[in-house]
Length: 105
Image (cartoon, rainbow, N blue to C red; front, side, top):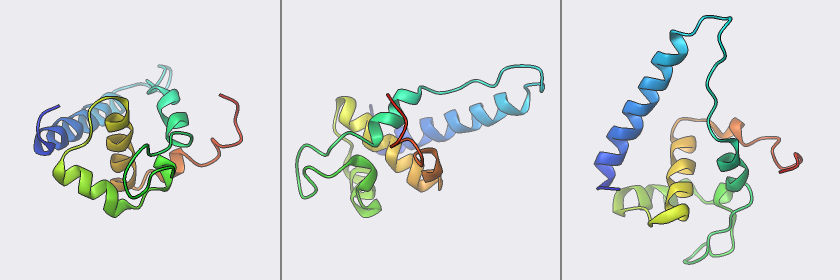
C-alpha cells in the first residue's frame, strides 16, 4: 500500500462508507459483516521480530503501532494485522476482541 497518509485516507473513507451503508439499511435487511477470522488472528498472531518479538499483536503497545503508522507497516499479512490493530486502538474498538479468546476458531 502507498504511504501511511494514503492508507489513513482510504481507511477513513472506507469507515465513512460503511457508516453510510449501515445508516441506509432498514431493520429488515441484513447488516453487512467483516471477516471475523481477522479478529481471531489478532488474538493469536505473535509479533515475529523486533522489540516485541513473541508478543501477541493484541498486546502491542499503541506507541509501537503508532511508530509503524508513521514509518510504514510491513508488507503482507503482518502489515494488515498491525494496521487493523492500530485502527481498532485508534477508534476505541478493543471490545471487538473481548471474549474471542474462549471461542473456538
